[in-house]
Image (cartoon, rainbow, N blue to C red; front, side, top):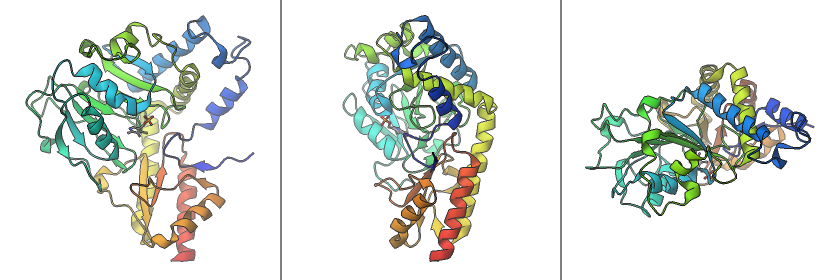
Length: 365
Ligand SMILES: *Cc1c(COP(=O)(O)O)cnc(C)c1O
């Protein structure tokens, strides 16, 4: 067996320790005589799994007690509808900051439920920077302000959550799609009303969506919101209103324990900074590759890059794959290459990529 360095944007690489543990526990979880996949979600074994997962996530992200952790389904794209269905509370507008391909989608989905207001950014790319908070232009009475704090496709990341109180909107909740950088850095809950993310980037298998929502926001749902997607209902049933994605929650729980063993979010953030620096510094110095995002907004998690000579793209991908470096093709809307450097990617993998890029540029430069 040989595993590749996997730069997939998602579903993405998982820590090898987690996969090994899951394999070892596949047929018989802790003496239960069955796989986690085969257990009742209401039994004591699975209850202990989900409670431990929630406790570990709360510890890792320092989630305050007045926030609920919901284990949901539907992915981040479903949240683009679930959020307005839960948070509009009869208001006609929510404000969207569009910083990349994912927030374009979020804005368009919101048009089914309200008249979203474009508070900053544009509905077309290229997306090379996050609109600075002082340039946000809010509508008169928005139900919430929506951002995507790491744009996975464009490789653009917020350095921190915008402070709506400092911008004169202390009572408007900030909603963030954190799918592709959750647990890669701390989250500032004092600035957030709700954060959500699909699991398949930094947390676990596809099929699980994490929603972390402040308690006072549970009372605003539209009567049309499906019960299984109503935050208040899901919270009241501790994510067991319907059958949750049990196996994905179990794997996420193993990832949380792995993260704690790595030293938690502060330690993984330091590692992520070092990994991103290694790659971007090389790209900038190479003369052969380039990244177009303004340096202060470059994502630590997703690094799109281009060969200056794009006729070499196919050879680059073929030779990279032969060297054990997989899933480097850029998103079709951006082109070029993209290396995703989630928590599970060790610096050795990034070093292997940079070595390959150097060697490729020597041979083709
Ligand atoms: C991957 C991703 C999505 C889409 O997630 P799905 O699970 O396919 O719904 C949305 N937003 C961001 C920021 C993402 O990275």
